[in-house]
Length: 230
Image 1 (spheres, rainbow, N blue to C red):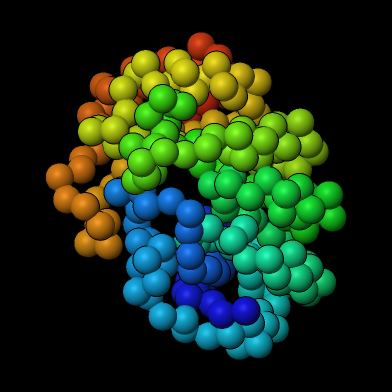
Image 2 (image 1 turned 180 degrees about the vertical axis):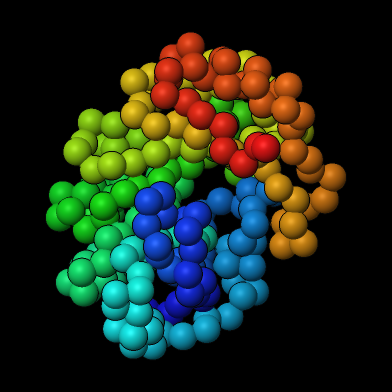
């Protein structure tokens, strides 16, 4: 398997763990606020193969206790379960990031307990999903199924939405709340502009707007929090 990026240590990407972050290329979506668009459109070349990754992980035994797998969309890779299986066999905890578009693969990973923590994106309210992910249309049934698998299963997880001023309003979080009512953990993440974001003129919401969005979400998901706001 080709690896398109490796952050050798992070205290942020995997809650409660000292981890590294492994970036895999490819994605179903074209979100205009994506921080890793080079992985989405293929312009970021691979940096190593899985052999080099496992050499790195072998050297980091005792220094790291977790591996976060992100993208792009990792579940595009049919050999992802084997990668996770080998990481788990080394004694590392695994966190998986996903947009939820491949529930069959996610189900297989959950059933085999290959991920200890899953973070799944809920991009926006159903009515605004296509625009938010940069597509003309999107079938939400796979995303809904992935959310259901997480919410009804034993694996620790979080659902999360990156909040962009131009794309999100408080009413969207009422619709999201109805969708994911009962979720254990839901985070509203403040958008941060970077040079790698493919489209300009996108901004972080004000603190007041974030609080309004949070209040709307908490009507249905009391365990909602804001992440990334001072």
